[in-house]
Length: 334
Image 1: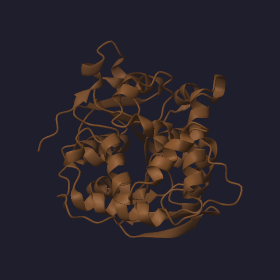
Image 2 (image 1 turned 180 degrees about the vertical axis):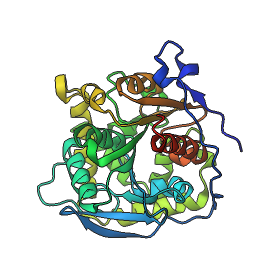
Image 3 (image 1 turned 120 degrees about the vertical axis):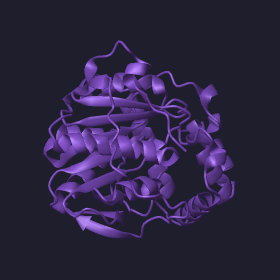
Image 4 (image 1 turned 90 degrees about the horizontal axis):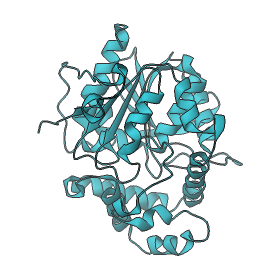
């Protein structure tokens, strides 16, 4: 299947030239194995921070760090990390409290704390500046890292980052209750409803929310996601991490002044790529052009028939755009 892409110029012709053209790499990519299992994971410690990490073996001289969204994990990057492996060794991390990364005592799950932990981990790797990629909440986290620690970042890719949107439209959600589940008071009943679902039913709800075409999600991947939900149900800190991180996002969304992500974005000077799906039901594509324009050196790729996790739903198109940026970063042409 050939992915059709829409550049920022097509989506918003009035924007400045810096976000009007996304060069897609013409370098051949590896063939994707539809039966590819998640890369093996283990707990790694760097910079005094211990995270569960899935490593994708690749080019030894370049490192890419992949950061998942709220409720996601390192398995969200299996396909994209595979496609980009010839060009960078991939480290897909589980943020504290997610996947299989146990949070330290007293960790409060704010976006700032997630960003601080990730920055310490990257610095501790000692691999020099890395290509940093984040989706949803992970997009907000890597945005903060790029703004505060630019010396650690070679390039930045934001896939439907959790930029503030005070006018979310619940009618666009496949299950409006999902967005209420982790709110105080009102969310209790919703959490009880979700807890009554089987792991496979909960996994299916996530895919229904995040994919433009949930039926296209492979059954073996749904099985993998259900297995992960089953395993995480045994972790005593999992629900608390999800609830506290959700509230951390909401607090950031209503922050004003220098703490707003809209104030942070203009501080990012590293080469950046923003990717969004037109059918994103979680963070509206309305945020896309504004996000790209707020960054100093960004270009925007809008993918039709794509939901909230473009790296999973359109991995080839995303890989071509990311690699196109990496190639131009190396040639100082971004």
